[in-house]
Image (cartoon, rainbow, N blue to C red; front, side, top):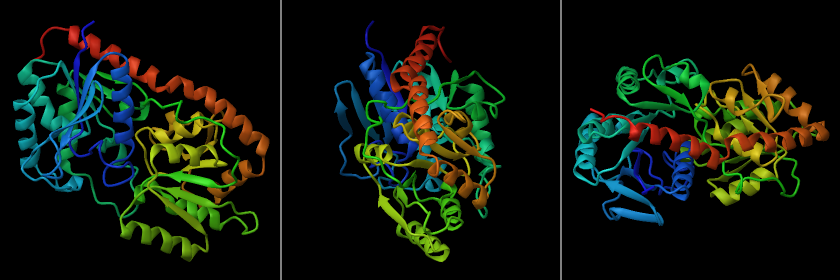
Length: 384
């Protein structure tokens, strides 16, 4: 089969940015993992994002068959998501349409779909949408004080679900919120060669997340405050954030009388090493569409304790790869943490079974499922 040209569009999140900085988080990891697996299966893939520095080249080759294309939208600087106004999205769409053509466009996040779906229709090629964060799912699972979701986002996501040839949802929780369109669930793939057991045994807890309120780091700190100091495990946090984010976390820990260790943004190799040596991986998020960190922890042979929220209910197989906590109660989280810290044999069993479970979402398996869906769409009648 001739290699097909696949465009993975991520307007607001550049795969060239270090993971854990800016908007480069779980979606960036998902894109790079999927793209590399697709290339190894014989496809040619371009990751397409907006230019954030006028000095950046238009094309960056990551490896044979895999490139990053940077598109001008008239404002070549880093912008937070709320600052990506419709004129910039429209400009991105025009530049995308004027450039190289592809056999299929797969958009990631709703901004990308708003720009890319009209281009796919003009070219007569399939358009696939993955939301990563769906407004309807996160609207009820937001931290106190979070502002309301933009009404135009609800309308945009509904239009994309209805008009795209396919929506690939990352979890059953997300798929349940999509009431129109052709929806298939394909969980994100985990790199089981990078994330594997075998590190020196540690006795610390690890959170791998950007220092955002929605990640619920305050809850983990408050849980540790309920554990006697002489029994309290160390909490290490791997993830980037602004000085304001860091100060908020350190101030909260100081007020709670809890010592924490901020590791900053780690590259993938160092994160994998930190994870395989942890005693437990914590995911106290208010919401996750899936929660890739949970399967990375499982692949590393480390038990996971996570919120019973959103896609984490898919990512953590309860009693197999870890535990799910029903409420955002520091007391309940402290109880769950100490139930495992005081039972090394149970931690070992959960780690071993979690490693076996992670084979179901191996990156090659996930990419093969996505590639099968691409093949069905490309073989279908013209798309207009």
